[in-house]
Length: 400
Ligand SMILES: Cc1ncc(COP(=O)(O)O)c(C=O)c1O
Image (cartoon, rainbow, N blue to C red; front, side):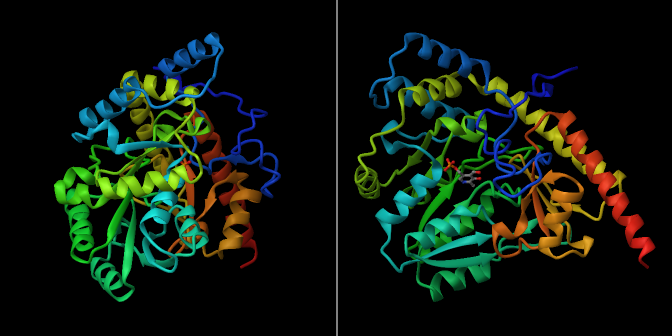
């Protein structure tokens, strides 16, 4: 049966960074863009209706978070994650990275050490360094299946030796597609408590736990973990609303909350637009059924890409996938350096994937592929990849 996600929409000339900036980013004009984490699907009908109603009224004045918004938001996290958060623990922000930056600025000083786990979403190290904090990197390891694991011994050693003040967790983890287990999260949280390290948990991908995996929201581990944690969430990935710029920072600890909000107020930032509230309230109130359909479509996409790569005998290993709509592809068997790998995908396969080295330590030899597109687009992408690999094999055979 055809799904609403099968419809291929022409996103060209709508100002999309994914589609309209190919040449500006140095890519051929005809590459299929499967890089930045936004999906090629329309937002849920409940969101589109709320936005139409909002536009029909025609006044876009100043606003603040209303109870209807806070109720929809807290209810989402209560029913889906079992987290009984209070509406006044949160502050609305234009993006998760804004919130992480505000928390770093409010709760640490220049020169303080902040730890991240690489490979990871590139703005993590960027905001730490651009705010003049010391970057400490804990590199993740893989097991024999290619699944990423935390090196807890090194993690604790680094917390102590580097006198780390903040640990910035990515959960689910972009790009390695892990859903951290409650035991892993509890151990991370316990080590942070033991060594007086504040924990910021970026859970922007929380709604994309796939294949029966269950996302544990960090603060649900228990009161002591909740009190030591700042959580960042957003409806943007979940309902494909990135351009509306709406996210939440949750700060259960009242002292830290005051400090983080004070930092936001340094920019006279009082919250998101009335348009963002209209869309977000509708999404959190009525978007659950749409999300469930989307998640099974994405699982189908991940299975499809994995099977096609196997069938074409691509020298590419799919990292075991637990969550997010971003696949992490290990291409080391291709025997190319990172510039050659990037050039192969862009110029030969005509595919725009995100190069692994952008994600820091351990990213070499990898590419990140966004599978948030209609299946027919992924079919074309896999056909192009198969063709490019076949040509390469012929070339390699001739030159031997
Ligand atoms: C882990 C992670 N955090 C933050 C962001 C960006 O969030 P925002 O646009 O809300 O700043 C992304 C976007 O891909 C992400 O993957």
